Image (cartoon, rainbow, N blue to C red):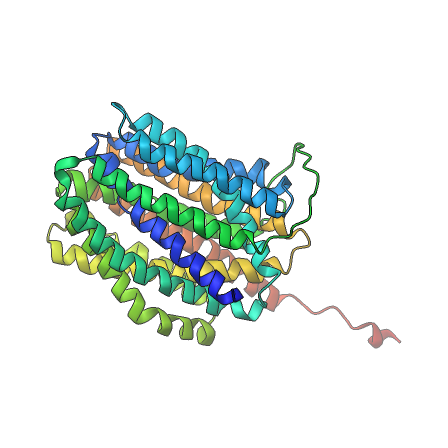
Length: 398
């Protein structure tokens, strides 16, 4: 199988997993009667366990096919347990527990996969591959969300079994995709020695700042579920239309955005995406019209797609500057996931003291402050550098 075919097929299968397993998982948890705090935990515990895995386990494991496959098996066990636990009388604690186990395993494969790809793919090819992967994902998520949303509503009389069937499809897809990438991993055996390690040694100021922006982005995830499901009582099909619209907009405009990345630079487009998402959530809590929400979700989907492509490309480009590549990948993913986890917890705390519209306003303002905190210090540093007197050349004294 050609390398590109293997990479794109894995992307397709992982997105089938995403749409059939995770797109409606938060909706399922809400429909099972979860409180706002439990919804916040559902958004924060998985990335927090991802961060713990990256901090103390992932970086110590050698890059071998055996390690990659073992983590994949643990991940598959956790996926199956999550799907089947929905049938239990009180499923939410079990769901969160197995989701956390899955998070530990998924970070091992998630951190090792970029390192595997760097052994096979030229650095100049990463923007094209990530963009194509994103396009594949958008098409699958768009069509899949539409189909699964209607399927869940059509078979709502067997709830929650209708969700379980969808989740089992995702279990099969993720295992197959993992096996495809495992074939590219080094076959040799290396000893595993787990010791105390100090994380974040390879994290620079830019990486910390991107993690901070991730925290701001993650703040709105539980609020969207609360607003769409608990306040507006939207159906699965209506929520699917949000994903479909975001997918269509991203499909049409992401190729143009990739051209802009090449022309104007990755970080500039990354910044536009972060600012675009921040401003869009500002009026969210006051809007009840479905079509207005649909337009906002389309815009947010496009900004998030640009953000993901830019972030992944920045990560791969920056890795070349670090001697400890796996440590850098682990630190990068650690900060991104820590940001996701902390952001969701902050959102849960806000819902306890503010109305939803107030939460959206606070989050929008906070995200803008996060973004400009780094840009401001970067501008000041550049100004100081320009003003600094040049040291006399050694030749001047000869």
